[in-house]
Amino acid sequence: MKPTNQIPAEKPQFIERILDLAALVEKKSYFLFGPRQTGKTSLIRHSLPRVPFYDLLDTSMYLALSQNPGRLAQELTGRDPIVVIDEIQRLPVLLDEVHRLIEDRRIRFLLTGSSARKLRRGGVNLLGGRARTMYMHPLTYRELGSGFDLLRAIQRGLLPSIYFSDDPQADLQAYAGLYLQQEILAEGLTRNLPAFSRFLKVAAFCNGTIVNFTNVANDAQVARTTIYEYFGILKDTLILNELPPWRKSIKRKPLASSKYYFFDVGVVAALQGREFRYRTPEFGEAFETYLMHELTAHRDYVSGESLSFWRSTSGLEVDFIIGDHTAVETKAKENLSGQDLKSLRAIAEEKKLKRYLCVCLEPRPRKIENIMVLPLSRFLDSLWAGEYS
Image (cartoon, rainbow, N blue to C red; front, side):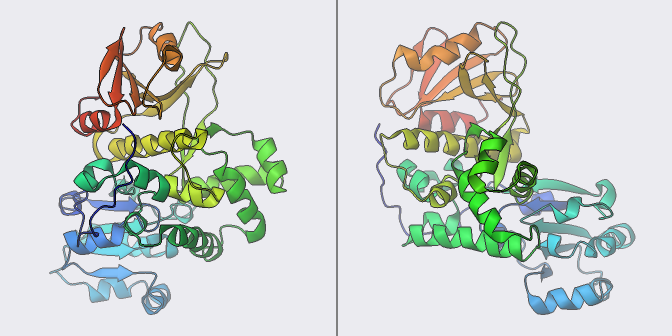
């Protein structure tokens, strides 16, 4: 089943997202975090069109509230049961006023942001459990429906504005620059932007791997301790997801180091300065990164189950473990060989998991011993239908 690179129709006026914001804030306040351009603001304006909306990227609004946080209480009335504050990480001091309004007036807040770094610093009021946390991701297979095209998704990524762009490469390059300018420089997350820029490109080539921090430090020409800080920035700004190891195997000793994946395969391609072409090793790596995105979104939107990977000290590896019940190996191939199932056979010998799946580009499902070989679309349909819970 070769990817088609079909050109989807023009972007619809609004793509229905899985997150139901109105239902989320019906009884509780929420932090809604997600990388820039994942569609948070569009979803808010569609789902909560008549609620007060405070955009802290608006300079005048930012200055007014930073000079007088109490102005928030002065402007809100008893007719405002729900309030949205966008980019809350820009003004953490405002959370004291939010806390008071939740307690005194029972107002429910939706507090959005593209970074949790400033909110995790000591002394910041995180509302003491009065607000839950939800994460928003780029578009998913389920949300796109008939508009989904695998090759387009891998070569462009799934940020809404870029997936439907008439110049995706330019937009991806601009996105990388926007991230550096708005998240790193404007928020003061590091003082050495040239060093961070070098690191970001090196980190992109470590996507989907167990990172050798010493090698990254050498390639980026910065201290090893700085590399740990830079990886922390990528995680806190939601650009990077950490995939921990699954350690419950007994017959084969597992590795204990995590893998790291960028949140969007198109952003990875832009940072690496290349295009992921079909039937290349790079395409296989991109296919795996795309599956990581779908699994992460499903975890955060629906299941809440853990995600991990398994690698033995002898080099056998299974890409993903869902909870403690399903092993998922990815192969961007139209015809699998027995060698492609070697790692799944090895982890099956542990007899600890319920399912063993190989997600690939074959046109039809088949079963080999206790391993199900599944076309991508069949796997994703089943995943979002709740069959792998």
